[in-house]
Image 1 (tube, rainbow, N blue to C red):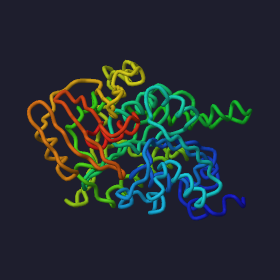
Image 2: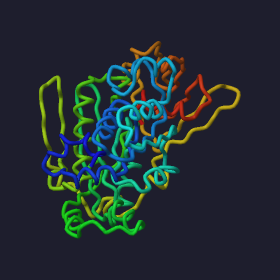
Image 3: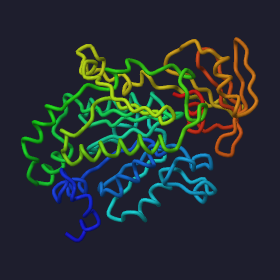
Image 4: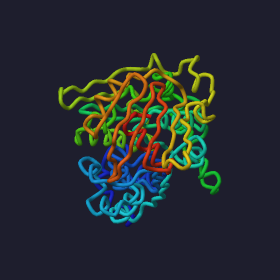
Length: 377
């Protein structure tokens, strides 16, 4: 019981108790993205005693992160530590009972299934729909609950997707391999009863690059990040403790500037038979259909990025968004912007079809990060 003493106040809650806490200690959660949302989520799950966290993030800590990314401090930014590693170090001092594995890499269709293997929940801490669609494919294919969240400006949104065709829970699979008793049959029954559709029931295709605001172009209010991320963490704890009756599968939308809090019932849009992913079980994102491609341009110190689908961008609108980050020039054929990011200077050249050159690096992961921050994919 000694190892559980630190969770005493949590165990007093309905739906927890010693059994719920032990479920948390046995659980494994994948957090994709350890920036604004992800750092709060990791902090809350570690403090709650989720036994194994897998954190995947490609970026390093910079000074502009500290306004909202709660696990990091000035020393992390000065050292340029990868966010996942900085998070691991902080979490080790918060809860030594929690195992933290870090992946400092781009999450893509080639590695995401390996990262999600054995996980009970996948939590979304990313800033782009390309990765969200990948998470959704893995969620549906392998029956892993997906906790979605996003925040930009003063607004945020969350939703939980519980796969309709979920196989036996990851915890039960691990217990069987270890020769331990299975979870109670009624828990499996409830899991089937609470199943929903998926992200693609709501958003058929990812939005084109450059059409949606990002935190780096529109700004973001720190408190709205914390609200969204804490909602995600709470839903994750409900799932892991098998309190599925309490899980919110509505879209929850907040705007802290307009003082609004809304819930949208999307049950009629979910589990559509014609949904490409959960209805037809075609995993196009895992097959690479929506993956952007990158190519190093030898001799020019640049990386070319080509989005998966071509859309006509309004370069004038994009230029207005990028003005705050440096000199921007645009015409009908091309936009060129000088961008300072993480202490480095880049020249971003964008064409109307979304294709771009990122000058100032030959690191394809760094170039994708810059592209995602300023064009939103």
